[in-house]
Length: 307
Length: 63
Ligand code: SF4
Ligand SMILES: [Zn+2]
Ligand SMILES: [Zn+2]
Image 1: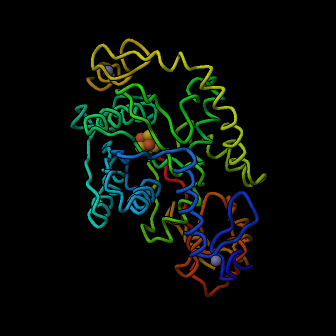
Image 2: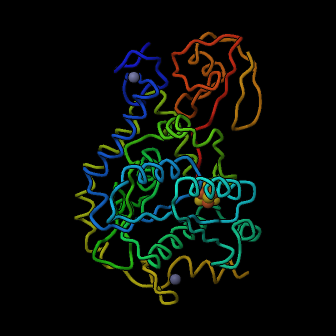
Image 3: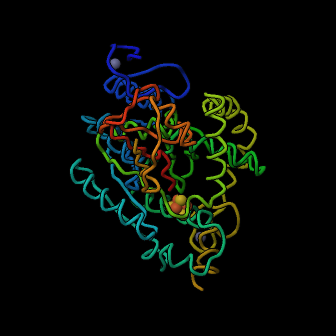
């Protein structure tokens, strides 16, 4: 087996095809794909103020590195990294240590906001009394903080490290739970431009699989240890992920197919739920955008967090 | 040969001549790991022998 392009020793077989690539050709393939996603879907515009949601994990670290590289020389565009410290002992503390050093080395401004400071308790503390699924509450709190802080920092785009696997999982989860309406907000770029209270989200790694991102992060020497959140295996998402990976192993290309058929449906979904998406309420307690009278975060604060 | 599984921080002992065979014997889904042989990333078709130092890194991060 040799690299399809240059006859060198291959390091990877691309997930949805029979193509083998060597280290250099794979890095080129990866970076080209990110650039193509950015231009095809117009993820970045003139004078953008981009906030990158980082965690110290492989996805957001690769994203941070690449956006910095791709946008080098663009004086009109600003990049800031923000990280949410949920307060997960032995996991987030370690990844944030790594992130601080990475941002310093790559000269990116980093701002960290913690659950403890913003809500009064860390996730570990919350989970002592909250007996629901950790990711349900954690996901709500994180999305809330990301949106709120991006706004305070006057972001025009919020870039996240979501990869093809993450998106395929979300699509299938929404399908299984009869939440198609939520899927109308997925895709490489989301959010309602007209609404100043909701920052458009962009996903430059949209068409790259989790395995490809891991390989890239490893080859670039970003890290050689990839930790998993201790709460992650218990999640519904975790089970969907395992199921999709089982299918992928038996029927290569499954995850790509989910994404491609979803992208064909997306314009229809957006059109169908357009009125719905625009009918955003603002939380009576904190005035963040939400779908009901009071946002989920404020409800959590009053019930489980203040306990 | 000894294989290091980073996710669970353990060593497993298996006999195999290719990466693919090795993963099959360990019942590990190839889409969930990257394989490092002597500190280099290798594809599933790569040959392995007793002299090689093999490490499996989970691609799943979650969070
Ligand atoms: S895996 Fe779940 S609990 Fe862990 S950081 Fe992600 S959302 Fe939070
Ligand atoms: Zn090559
Ligand atoms: Zn609120």
